[in-house]
Length: 358
View 1 (tube, rainbow, N blue to C red):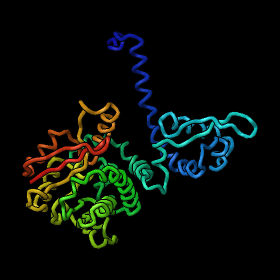
View 2: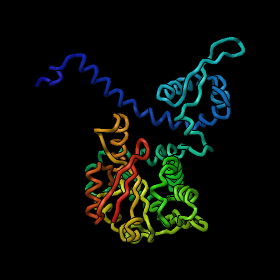
View 3: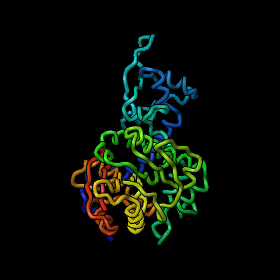
View 4: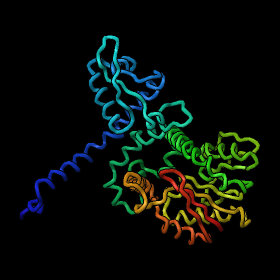
């Protein structure tokens, strides 16, 4: 039987080949980024105070001279992907030498900075976590198991509870992401200004709650998360930590905050969580609401790069039995959970802020 490819123009076939090869080699993107963070290169350049030459970088890294060319290859690729800028450095021998400076992306990988996403890289590229995605074929045939159930032998959250080291990596990663979200929350005064109390469900170690408390000193804030997460954390006059199960009970407050929570779960579970939120919020029409910070899929309005990222995250959430949702899918959840109205506002380039009212 003749192959259907015979009807294609050679130019089409070669373009298709390039697309396949491109995706074959994209595994190098996360591996190079992981290498960069593991070698602490953003901090090295930051501490250097100016663009650092290849020879100086190799010296500080203390790698064999025979690997200097490989360091250069990795740095050039990372620069091509936007993590560094390549500049020309004129050394004392009056020879031109390649040097590297930070970009905004690599500034976000400098450990010790207020805004630092290095913990996200360290968690997601941990071999135990990233290696689970080698089991996609097996997972797709399992009726009920999550990807992590297939790869790790237990539910993701159960796995974290049983593995303190991975649990810490996860909490550190979520805290680093929360600091990015807090940058946007500083412009959300209207969302919180009439509230007297708020519960941050799945609030982790309290990174977001602390910012809310600092911005609104009269606001009482409760961080509600798994007992293993909050058991050794201490609050203050307007910040408290409570351990529990959001499917069973959520502490009462004027508002409930769900940041990066609902996309982890099925529609059925989301409705259960939202029903508990509805029970928790005050009946005061002016105050009572649930505040959701999450993705809203919108292919028609989003740039292609953002759409691709959202689709990638949708696959990631599917592996937890969750999903990313468009506005109609969000609305369906709100209606089925008994809420009367909602409002969606832009939040960051990636996220939206959704207020829903009982």
